[in-house]
Length: 317
View 1 (cartoon, rainbow, N blue to C red):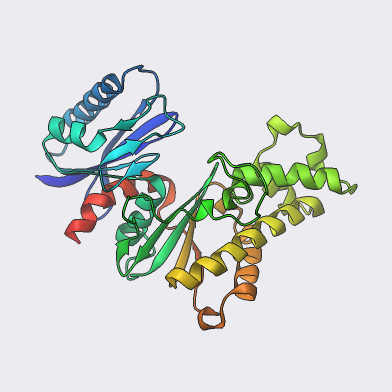
View 2 (view 1 turned 180 degrees about the vertical axis):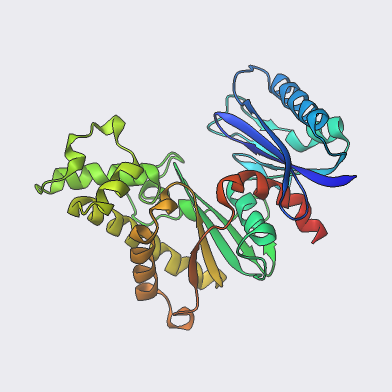
């Protein structure tokens, strides 16, 4: 019998799950739409049905020993989803309790960036590290911070939100209701906003001028930069500087050995990493200079599910 954990990633559009063993190997996976059901309980019924069917279809005799879940506003302390802005069900949802009662195994919940950090520690590039950070660069900016071998949660379960450090007081409006948060500058959405600001400010030629606002993506900016588009290169240089300056400050609090980057924007590679590294080292306190490595995540496309499952495997490491 093969012991596995179920890693579940709850996204705004789809929920993905996988059966992961202690070595990070998947023994089955599946997906369901997240928000087609009006009642949260009905969504969970669909999820249980899909999990049960996937187990039945497996050629291995699988034994589920726990469930780890990455979810928006997932609260590790309470096992709930607390007022997630991108989910249709409001209030505090008793996710761990309801799944635990159905599957009769331990269930742990956190947000997707924290899950990614644990996944990096158990299955990725941070296996021998007790102090590191994972930055997820997607539509927003998420972060998972590991200190002395443990994830930083804070007293309420929501610590470590690097994306909501204010880097420009009175700056860009953020979805959290404040202005000037880092993720309004450093994220796929932030790159898009920077692009249009620079297009308006500079008169130079750029292939980006022909793209309507709603059609522009961070990948288009990266592709243009890699083709030598000077404006696109400056957009990534600006974005990298913003992130590097912020990480220089965060390093003074956590002193990480490494910072791992994950997500669509991180695929820009050195186009982003080089200005981040330069700005971080330029602004960092002398005690931490040249001590922190910047690395791409080693988890690959299954990062979300691996990270969620690591919530359980971490306790058994």
